[in-house]
Amino acid sequence: MNFFRKYIFPALYGLLVYFTVRLLHDTDINERFWERRFYINAVEMTCSIIVGYLSVYLFQQLFKYYDKRWPVQLSYQGVVRELAILVGVNLVLVNAVFVPMDIILHHDDWKVWWIPWADVADINMIPTLYAIVYYGIVRSSSWLRAYVDNKVLLEKVTNDHLETELKFLKAQYHPHFLFNALNTIYFQMDDDIDGAKNSIEKFSELLRYQLYDQQQQVPVRNEIEYLQSFIDLQKIRSTDKLKIDISFDKALNGQMVYPLLFLPFVENAFKFIGGDYKMIIKAQLSGDEIIFSVENSVPQFKQTVAKSGGIGLENLRRRLDLLYNGKHSLLTNAGNGNFTAELKLKYE
Image (tube, rainbow, N blue to C red):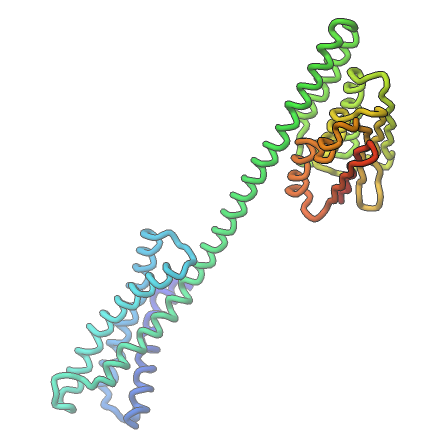
């Protein structure tokens, strides 16, 4: 294939240009190619083959020049710029060879020092059209490669941006968690040393899960165990009036979910609970969906705060849009002294 492209194709390219010019010219003046003098045809075909080799060589050098000087980009300006240079070089070449050849071969017939303008037009137009076709065929692979590279780069930049944003959003949960846990341990230190030690142990387990067990996705059972430990830690510093009802479906086990999606609901509930101090936490499996809901009573004077759900739920909405685009629903409702949040996820 390389032999054909390097040694055979340029000759065929030159002959294709020549026979196209001959066809148009002979049709116009009603002349037959085979009735012309042999040496004239031989000289013209030889010159055409030489032009074919020179043209392909120059085109290849121009392509190398393009790639070196301008990174390949599929743009209107880039294509026009490359074509203008290629057509200009091609016109110089064909005029430098074909015009003198035509003058020398046909000087005695025309008795003039210049060839007819119709021949000049054929000599310039036909090679130019073939040069443009050749450019389009050869450079199409470069355009395709540039298009694919641009798409890959765009996807990489987008993924890097989303990953950075996800890490930022996930990191915003940690200060809330650290602040609440440390406060809990601080209050225990005065009255219950053993309880404080137990809280530190739970705190270290929770922190270890957040810092070290953050695979892309985790079994939902791990999330439930994490939530249970978090709830146990929060109950220590909660008022005795707290009435909490927890219900986790036993069918929730190996379904894969992204981590720390349920935590903001529970964290938000403990943060804003008041009034009757009632809290209901549920997680159940329904078909291909995991339904997680939290309901907590709130004091009347915090209704406006409860409606927004706090920064935790706002961050959660953004994470869900990034991780479960089109595969989740999140509903919140505040009224009658209660705040309710329900999340539905299509698990994998």
